[in-house]
Length: 68
Image (tube, rainbow, N blue to C red; front, top):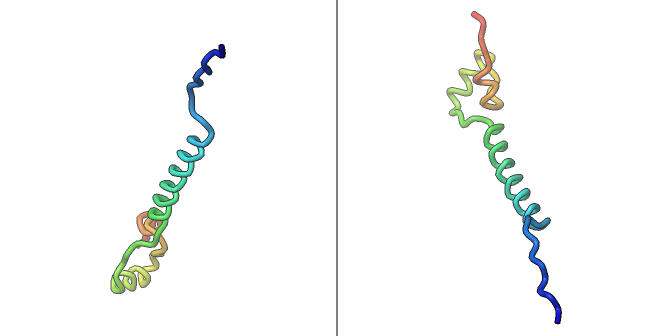
């Protein structure tokens, strides 16, 4: 008689690929949201541009320091 096959424990390649794809998708969504331009109304955007403040993303608005 044949002996029953031994069970292997661990994670397979397909499972690793699926988890990597899901994490990559979440990273893409988060980075896209972080680097997106902020939703500013026309008056605010005009005022910021008059003062020389770049409004391309949140980082430039937060890190802009105007020297008086």
